[in-house]
Image (cartoon, rainbow, N blue to C red; front, top):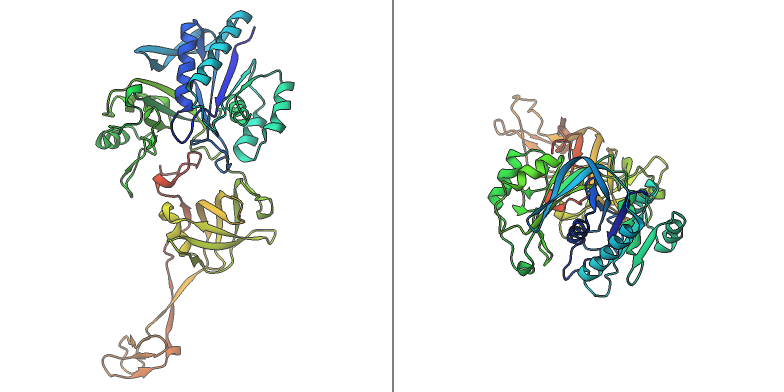
Length: 437
């Protein structure tokens, strides 16, 4: 007998619901059946460019069995702790069947019965091949392609409506989890769902000051609080961190309305797993990647504060790359570029051919020059410009010089070589963290 992996996806909708909360309901069902959680529950973000993605584009997974060895508290539900065991054994067939049935009933009960919400549950006796995760986070995976593969693996599938959620649920089980961050999510009492949240912004900033391992808690530029959603879902706040300890400690600092329950998830957030080195010729629709190339011409400002550049890669292919205004930092950086600058860009594509920038690294910049006022040949004083193409005049002896007398000097670039990222409120869940964050 082996422990079982359970993955779920597509249980939310624009009007409410939350797949992470549904996973806490599965933890509750397991505890009621005296079944243990093995390892941390996992929250896995998928390809952020898929047009049919769920609201947060996250799938959930967990492993269950009979726990043994070291255990750690990873959740609190109904005022009682939920422990994750370091290792464990499998379930008897009757116990497995009972739990799977309870889990699926819970998924159906908590998924909104609305068009476009098609919940799925995947059950496997072993972790699925990691290739499933890498495809789901980087490419377009159709259920019709994946379901036969899962059936060959002996996986049990439960779906309502379209089988779209099978992809995410399987990917949550297949995630290798070697590169990870954590998120502790606190939930509201059901009676408060859909009402304004109360989360103290000052306490969140204090938590991030005391726990440097936290990230994406607030945006100093826009003054937005990033830990609390703006939808009628059950989440009160979520604390993301580079360690489980930082998330646990920060929870005790944040001041908010009463927390009904909380759970700590191991996640692939901020790992950049969706990015893969590409050439522009392989940068197809709905994918993300990184491309190294040369700026072809000066940037072009677009309406709304967006800025576009054209980049040519090593194979000679060219594509427009757009920095959108909400990213704040990126349009200013892109606008400073010159033809010949060497850059590495990362971002994603929709149906149009342009790459939507998620970040940029300036590798090598061509020299920047500007025309400066020349010295007066008669008295040595610095002349002053009379306007564009009108030349210069000495303020002391009044001697005039033609425009071509201008002196060329080298200036520092507005943005030196290095990495530049969007402002925190415009960053995607999967976007790699800045080195200084």
